[in-house]
Length: 166
Image 1 (cartoon, rainbow, N blue to C red):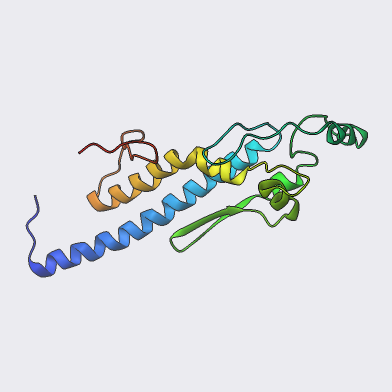
Image 2 (tube, rainbow, N blue to C red; image 1 turned 90 degrees about the vertical axis):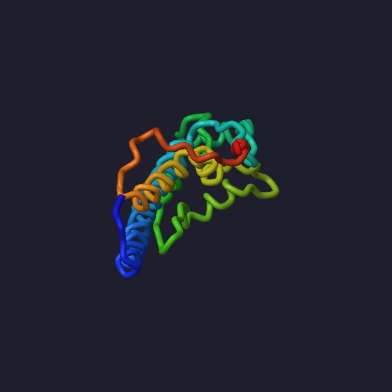
């Protein structure tokens, strides 16, 4: 155990703060890449319930027929040319990571319209990957505080629905 003077302890705290911010940034970047990849992987495959996000409804017969008429496969939901899938990106700004798209059709699909049921690929992906994201960011933060890397899979951070023991 190190012994610190008051000035030494203050310097140590300052160092930990800088390291924690650095590790948090890297953790957010890694987490955003994981959610982005999951969102892209969901395109073209029916998704089940994911927390508050409903399972995807079967494509309407008219939609299936229109897809075939245009030369696409009949039943790959949200996937035609791949343009929408490929528009999904991530960015990290400060202490916040964003995963999304500027594709207007993606907004209609994610949220639904009067005629289109919602097929959440962004929210569903974020929900499915939340435990993994918590472990990544938590592990990096703890590593910064302790000065030691946390071996993969050894950090368990409870998430919604899990109890925390006293």
